[in-house]
Image 1: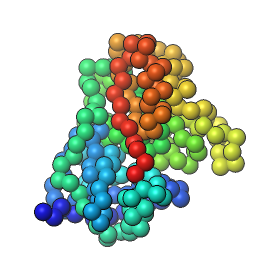
Image 2: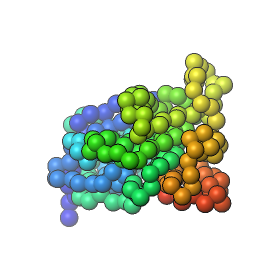
Image 3: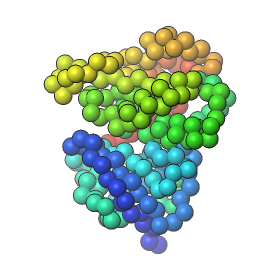
Image 4: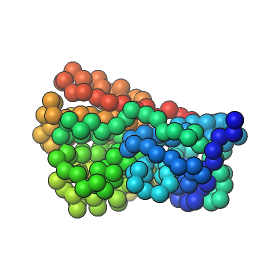
Amino acid sequence: MELPKATVVRRKDLTADLMLVWLAPEIPFTFEPGQYCTIGLEGIERAYSIASGPHEPGLELFVELVPEGPLTARLWKLREGDQVSIRPRAKGLFLMEDRYPNHLMVSTVTGVVPFISIVRSYLHQSRGGHHFYVLQGASYCDEFAYREELEKLASSHPQTLTYLPTVSRPQEERNRGWKGQTGRVNLVVEKCIGEFGLPQKETLVYACGHPGMIEDVKARLTPKGFKIKEERFWKQ
């Protein structure tokens, strides 16, 4: 049975190996913030977390090129008007848990994607009573695709959102002029918990992105009694 198609309606290249792509599925496609869709080309399929909120038209994805990856090398040839296959149902359990007032969201580069969907949806619904602390790590400051959006939202909704990007290679020329936080994101998590005053019983930690980062966050915070949800992004 042939899978439904989704058309590329927009593409934005962030760096040589990072792009944002917007898809318009030919079928009604519903999802919850934090879930992923499965797209494919030439019979090769992979899962990608969705950055857009359910209230937005189409699907927004943030994709990293893996030169040896069987799918991303093909995706990099996509242009507006091209099509990919899409599984008709979203999947995933990396969802917000309302019972926690504090949500500490730790990510590396594209791992921020499900957090974007959750925050956009939460603010769109004009909800309150929760605070999101989004920590995002990257090697280079030009890899923060949503930095401007998150900084604006944190400024306009300080009671709901705190955003902290950190670069791990501040000495390199590509990061010249960076005046923000430095260090790997997993190494600043404990410091942030202290600075933000996050109680263990009232805080849920989400870790999304590189498996090594996730393992280190778990090793640091699990003994302290924090509950951790994880979503691993494998090279594909």
